[in-house]
Image (tube, rainbow, N blue to C red; front, side):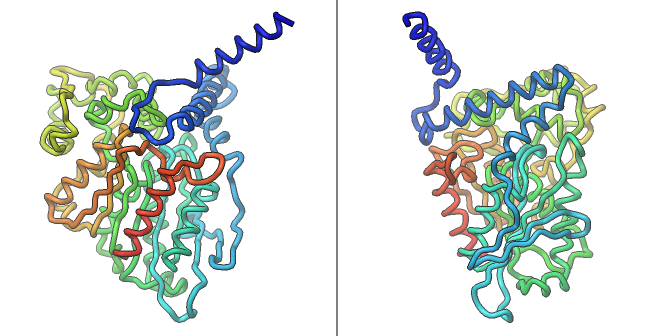
Length: 408
């Protein structure tokens, strides 16, 4: 009996040790986040084990766990008609509000889901719920782009899917088919989807063949650059779940089809060292010492190497491709963009990516709304359903949809 109790106590202590991590006192519902993070880390460990044994790619294991319990068929409800279809070879899920007459032109949002260009789906319960709610609350047509994922494809295929699907929807005949007002379309996305939404918005602005341009772009904690992994937010939140700094670097290398051995070089900014002249122009566009307010810079110091690893840029040139890193776009391009919404969270390694982009857009003369959450963490907006319900998820979603309602 004593040995049984001792074993149970040992398992309890071991489990508590695995779950507990120190978190900032200002973060939303810390114990719930610890539980979520422990589950996510556990799946990552299983994925890494499967990868090392040659059983499966670690990303496939992680994506299977992320999507296994939450994939929904296109089920319509009283207020929203849901269909799966294909736009120019790209899978999409369309949510059409059924309120009002058939002749009434509706607003529309093209939504691109997050997941490190490797995880998730438009068919996931969390994204299905978000897009369904947008369609119903805005009385709109929402197109959720189900782009292909790594490791099956790499850059620029995710971007191409997002662009082709969005461009097809903006065709006059397609907008007419769905009774959409061509002057009231937004492009939006979260995390890696925010990256794709920003890149798509830039290309749409430049594409002369696109006659119907988006009225808005709305970016939710977007990832926008891979040149500096030591911004203040990367330094401050390196150990804050659910997006740890090394994990973000792994997602970037998987997306850009880079060698995993480059992880350390990217973490210490060896790929943007001062001796690499081809990086100089792009490096200045992510110079957080001039783009961030003092309150965020605090006492953090830039990490700039005098000499670095030129092999990284040589083998992964997409690190300098504006389609992968929208933050490094020229100001002449930024000037063409529509009114913008940027949501950032204090406890997120990507916080400064969004803030720097908002600042560069403002410098280019674009009207920007920056919505910042002091208690927020990366990915929080899609955690609004059981069993991953967070009050911050409901709050960010409500304010995001409210902004769309007021501006679209």
